[in-house]
Amino acid sequence: MQQDKNLYDAVVIGGGPAGLTAGLYLARARYRVVVLEDEDFGGQITLTDAVVNYPGVTKASGRQLTATMRQQALDFGAELRVARATGIENAQGDVKVVHTSTGDIRTFGVILATGAKPRTIGFEGEKEYAGRGVAYCATCDGEFFTGREVLVVGGGFAAAEEAVFLTKYASHVTVLVREDDFTCDASVSAPTKADPAITVRYNTELLGVQAGKGGLAQATFRDRTTGTTEEWSPADGGTFGVFVFAGYVPRTELVKDLVELDEHGYVVTHDYLETSLPGVWAAGDLRRKNLRQVVTATADGAIAAVEAERYASRMSEKTGLMPVRPTDSPYQHREEEQAKKAREAATSPAPAPVSPRAQDANAAQGGAAARGSYFTDAVRAQLDQVFARMARPVVLRLDLDDTALSTELHGFMTQLADVSNGKVSVEEHRHSDGSAADLDGADPQLLPCVRLCVPDGDGEAKPTGIAFHGVPSGHEFNSFVLALYNVAGPGQPLDDATRQRIASLPSTRIMLLVSLTCTMCPTTVLSAQRIASLNPAVTAEAYDIARFPELRDKYDVMSVPCIVITKPGDSDGADGSDGTRTVEFGKKTIPQMLDLLAA
Image 1 (cartoon, rainbow, N blue to C red):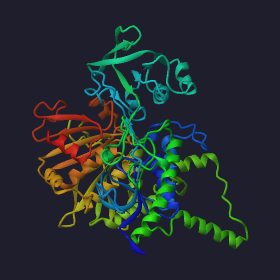
Image 2: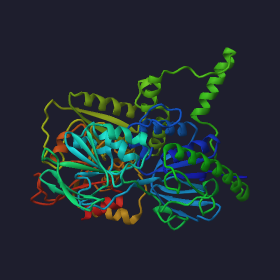
Image 3: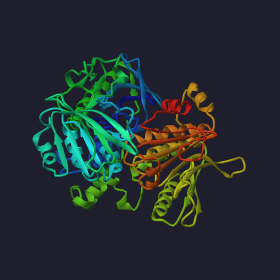
């Protein structure tokens, strides 16, 4: 048997509960597996404020639950990679090739776990006002409607649950249900029906919305029983928001010409979740099934993984090739250490008792807080891989004031530099309180800020045009680390045509308004900053909008990510009257960002 260091037993495409479970099972069985995720690990469930029906877990946020899954997968030796799968070559062969945004991966088997995305419903103004009053994520965008009325469109589980969540912010919530009752279990809809801050209108559909000064001002409803229409506006005469929870559309574009899909675009699976293509399985919300819940997604991931293990063994025997499979992992090290201590004490190993409060803290922070560290051992192991590949050092210029947020940023970046093996250093610049910030400018220069710099020919730190205002933690940590890699080189691979498009861009300043809880923001930030890393005429600076509400108010942001683009000759005024300052919303890949910048 010939070992092949460039071969995997399985590639899992998608890092939600199904994908993470598949990676966990394969790695625990000591098969070589990589889990690809193009946004942020955890999937749609990270948007859920409280999960109460997952067996063994009394209550946890979706983010806490999937953080534990991710840590388990890493502990067993699974590789987790932020990358977008773009195609599968030789799909019917013994060794398949998965094309990704960071390079090609050779593998015996593929598990599809790409999940689903929110469905649009097509009312008038939905597309036009997306990000400007129309939203699809209560966790991401609910706070932008504090003190305003909101409409929730939908009658299923998500609509019922998120309507209650939105009462934390909204002055009143009106739910529009097309049918004569909710379609979810009565136990789920009961709190919605009983909440005095919520009005439920049955047999009602939203036909359209109209904007006024400062946001959405009026909506048109239709009574599906009588056919009559009605104009609606908030009781206080102000603006309102619309949250759409009308189900999901499967993310199957990658395989639409490779595997069998049903009439709704879901992957058709057969015995043990195999698709119509041998060696390819589907797990989670993208496959045809009668129940889409976290528990069914994790079950799918486990089933698909076990089948992928058997398939990989058969392919090894058939081809004579064997991936370099993991022989040690953090889990194994802990088990060995525990067994060693038990032998020395002449006792049987048993887990130490952990209080529920400590368990919750560890789930939320990966156990880092207990050690007084921002980074867990598993995260440090991943960082080591990035630092080892960096072609040149990076200097983090910290522009700080006397606020607690500056202290947090300083601690975060100092610790990152400490674990970088000399690849990252910190340069500190202190500013007095009240340092002037130009909110009308393309770069407001709000503090605190970390700027990525690289040494020039004289050894001086030269800014790259990439910066983050606030602390790049949460969902933005991955995009920040990848920005380090991109400015240090060699950076994430891009084809020649894309590089030429980037090089041809004129002087452009990109301001990115993001939330650390937003799952769509990292892709947009990474795209803009990858472009800036290759074109010195382009800057890309991200702002944590929760820390700088003045920017939210200035640009009337009702959804994130918000992208503010200023081009040569633009006015520094708010309306860009001397040029074209554009404001856009939504997740953007590099090609989409280039299209936006070229418009």
